Length: 284
Image 1 (tube, rainbow, N blue to C red):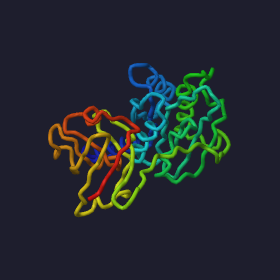
Image 2: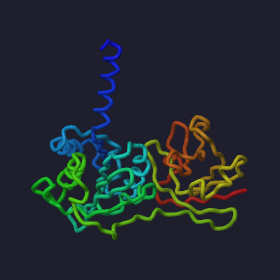
Image 3: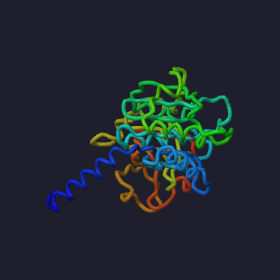
Image 4: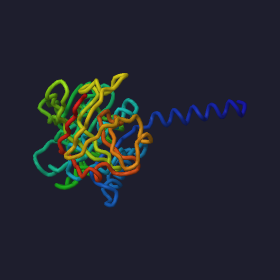
């Protein structure tokens, strides 16, 4: 075999080996100053040393299920088919809330049954949801405070080794669904919404999507006023670079919702708003 053909063969072998590795993603509210994320990875690799662990985020607001749902919903669809997703935002750890395993047409999800997967479900065809009860797959003893280590990480690792979902527990149908607050069209020219979250850059995400106000995202966008508390935004830009310094503007964010941003500054701080604030969009 010539050197060129040898290199091509090695590339194919490396590619095949990589593609055969199971991918496990982690989304938590654990932060990175404590050892919890590293411990979960250690548990996974102890069971399946060939697993590939990828961090989506560990900066979800503490105990904030909605923030976890929003963070994860923006991310999971960009991973290869067959990925195993672990989402641990679990203020009910140690209570009667159930650990669940969800199988869809593209992926598997392991999480507490508290609604944290709800927004991801909107993009997925759910094939089955199982209550994880087969505790011989758990790390023993199971603590009352760290199911990420003792339940969710080992279950994901055993899944990555090919264990069938049916081995973990029975199918359930009464799993928790979290309802995302929807904007309300008051009349032809007015929509009431709310702030869903504020990101690291201080950008303010609303719950208003293009489908809620197509007039704003047509070839010739309608004039508008976006009111948040005592502030009024009248400019819609297509990129952050188009914004003027120190002037809040509206933009369609990557999550598919209307946001308010300030170029190189925090819109949330400038507007003095946080999640839950009312947003009023007036057309014309």
